[in-house]
Length: 385
Image (cartoon, rainbow, N blue to C red; front, side):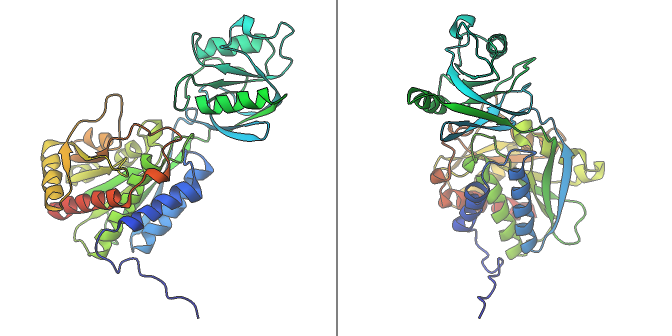
């Protein structure tokens, strides 16, 4: 006999293990979810199906974006496949050839006889990326791989690049050099075309046309990582929050949105807000943003004073340690799009210095942290109703 179907609404309490399973699906099963790629589409479909199972009316909002940044790429060096990011400005396509180490890319770092279509492996430093590419092209390179001179992914711009050019981490650069030291290594570079279309997934209670609250977070990642904390953790917490609201039959027009292309400049949340009628903007009480919430770091509350204080009180009542804070310098998240439209916001966040690196993996995600985040967010929703 077939096993009975588990009712997702039979447990009214927030569950960290359920949220963790969504993180696993997004990171371990799907993997990197760069906007405009097959990974994003797989995540979109998973999120849509899951939210529909909770009884919501779910729509997919399609929007354009500048797909030339964060284009995923792959390099093969010998028997190693390494993740890479195409430099902005690099042409799409593929190239194969012998891999030759070329220092930091100065003219004298290339063989006097030229490269004859070989792929140049160059270390970051001293010269601009554009100058490195120009020197490699002048030496007859068929493609360029630049590896970082510090920890983390290498993402950059190179104006006027005429040959495929990608960046990799320092660790992967060392891997490539080991392949060279073991003997002549063939290499290949594959750069995806910029697709330029991404998606938001929006869940509304049946019959609701105008949202009074929106709880959301982005589900896309940067190419070099499956983005377990940034932001599979927030996306998973939003999904579990939506389930808890449905299980408790929470009254009110509480909507849930998973945004695409956040990593390209908050594009999905901006498209969502731009698509709202003035009356819908004026009638929205609050936006709750969940982004980077899966590690053991303390919960930080960011946003409008009244909303931050409300979230602090709810955290205190739930026994969750939380303090008011500010968005880290040089950072942004999807609540900005709502705040600029005059909608009150609160952003739930846990500081994580390893986002946008290959270390942002599922082993660092804690079900307890996900559960705490959902409990605080649900308390805010209940207070707003």
